[in-house]
Image 1 (cartoon, rainbow, N blue to C red):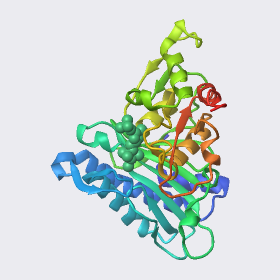
Image 2 (image 1 turned 30 degrees about the horizontal axis):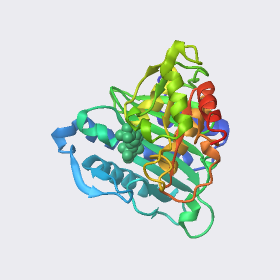
Image 3 (image 1 turned 30 degrees about the vertical axis):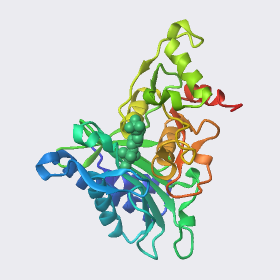
Length: 326
Ligand code: AHG
Ligand code: MN
Ligand code: MN
């Protein structure tokens, strides 16, 4: 399997007759991620660690690398005439790019910001939507997750790995010694059952009752109604958690909590939940907001937050069913 990304994209687009330009958009994203990867690997040597001393529209402190990764994504995508517009977690509003472009690209340029300065896995998440006709408006971006043409992430971990779906399965590429993404795995299948969960337990008291009950059942292990012991992981980088789930199953949740009624969850629908949910579904898993499939949610705003439960089907359905009367 020594197929490089560009060759894979060419083969894949012929096989499935993908719309023109889409694979070029993926190449532009991958180029930006190579540039981000370069900076991530240098770290302190290129003075990219620490705070940028600015805030984003969502009131979050920006790290230097959040700002830099955002700019590298914008630069690479702006150079591609197929891209009509961009939306980023780090930008207040959408960015118009090329009037004649056919695609919209939405991204979280740097996921897992709290891990940058401590050398723990981080990533970039992206989603590609078709551009509706007419002068670009915010409404054009507010398409549900089923409309995505492609999504994926790059994990800057012990290896740099690109995980991509063009809605005909999933492909994994590992960055090789020549700095090229090389196909290393296709179509991982997420096990339907699992004994591993990921949630930030420090927020437990803020969750709604059904989530409290669900996690209490997992913690009860063999002695509880689930009848098996569970293990727990929390990296605090969604990219790393989703990658673990693709590789060995599991359930991940960032649930709704009662700290801020304006924020039904922490994660962003357009930049995090939708692209990851498409990957998870393509790998045979499931993703809900505790009530409905993430991909079916009609977005109301670019920076909309959403509760997320995703991963192994049996576990996601069990946790979601607990919220049925909530
Ligand atoms: P970002 O760095 O893009 O703001 O996203 C971080 C997200 C996600 O990657 C992770 O699952 C979660 O926030 C971690 O949140 P806590 O620090 O609250 O655990
Ligand atoms: Mn993120
Ligand atoms: Mn981010």
